[in-house]
Image (cartoon, rainbow, N blue to C red):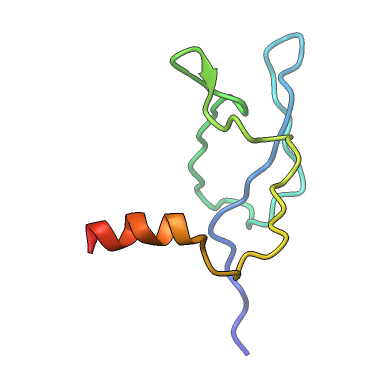
Length: 80
């Protein structure tokens, strides 16, 4: 069996007072070259959160497979 190679690791960290981020326990061998990209966890796009539904209650569909209403079917028929 071949060993599993980890290609990507995503870690959420807070920046310390001195502007440092400490990361330990990475699943890479000593001497391997890695690429590091740092970005804000909750980015703003045009003044709003990029993921506005994050940390909200999920939607619940009581009967997701039920047929649509007649009035909706008439609208769909007009576009066919």
